[in-house]
Length: 102
Image (cartoon, rainbow, N blue to C red; front, side, top):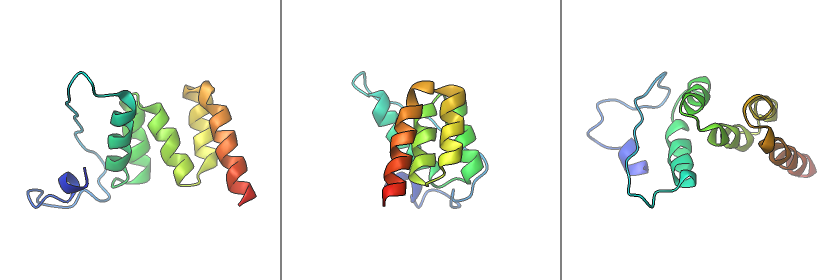
């Protein structure tokens, strides 16, 4: 993934991009958590609002929540979880509690 993002074949950097065409292909053994990890690495190079919007449009809600948690933006993580993935609210609570303990 890092090699693809930093490829000399790219004419410009994708850092701060406002949109991107994102496609993944793989074998039958490609797992959803692997797709989430690839998407998270890719969107870390995009503008934050666009990154979350892209993940949400692709149905990768868990990846969007993970990015918000990783960036310690718990308000947005709670907002996304409450609206789109209520089963992830306890996860966000746990990560927020661990953050507060540190």
